Structures are given as structure tokens and as C-alpha cells.
Amino acid sequence: TYVVTDNCIKCKYTDCVEVCPVDCFHEGPNFLAIDPDECIDCTLCEPECPAEAIYSEDDLPNEMVHFLDLNADLAQKWPVITEMKEAPADAEQWDGVPNKLEHLER
Ligand code: SF4
Ligand code: F3S
Image 1 (tube, rainbow, N blue to C red):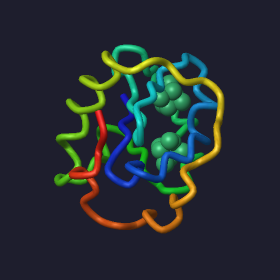
Image 2 (image 1 turned 60 degrees about the vertical axis):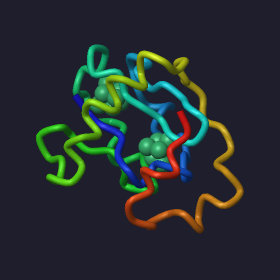
Image 3 (image 1 turned 90 degrees about the horizontal axis):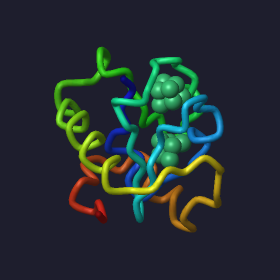
């Protein structure tokens, strides 16, 4: 499966959702999650993310491994998103800020 990681938090550009052939992105207030049971590893979303927040689970850096369970958990709770929407007004300011997990809204 592919996994959305830390840098999506408060950036949420949503370019990723347009390319997913199986609609496995789920939207929360300031983060997106991929449903690992739906993802078919097509690879299309990874290069679409301007924040470079999407990884294959096989390439997850050690400090991001916990995002695998987090994506699975949040995807159960949040609705599917299939169309791109405007990013938060301050998305650019948050792009690249490390360790944004404390800002995740559920
Ligand atoms: Fe969707 Fe493909 Fe990305 Fe999986 S790898 S979330 S199937 S676009
Ligand atoms: Fe997040 Fe990147 Fe998609 S910032 S919403 S994973 S395009």
C-alpha cells in the first residue's frame, strides 16, 4: 500500500486524489489517509503530491512507519475524497515543517 505521511498535515494539497483509480483517499480536517485495503499500489499518487508526503510502505523512512497504522485507522473514520479542492490558505507556510503530528485534527 501507499501511505500519506507527516508533511501532508496542514498542507493537504489534494492533487493526489485525482489520479487514484480506486478512490482510496479519505479526507479529514487537515490530512488525508489512504485505505490500505483498497490501494492497489498503482504508484500514480506518489509523484502528484507537491509536498512529497506519499510513500510506498516499502520505502517508508523509519520515523514514518507509524503512519501506516494511522492511515488505516483514519481511513475507516473519514469520508472518501475524489476531487481536488483548494489547499488551506497557509499551506505553503507549513510545507516542510517537521513533525506536524501534534497538529493533526481527527
Ligand atoms: Fe490510489 Fe494508486 Fe496511490 Fe494506491 S498507489 S492510493 S491505488 S493512486
Ligand atoms: Fe496531502 Fe500531498 Fe495529497 S499534501 S492531500 S498527500 S497531494
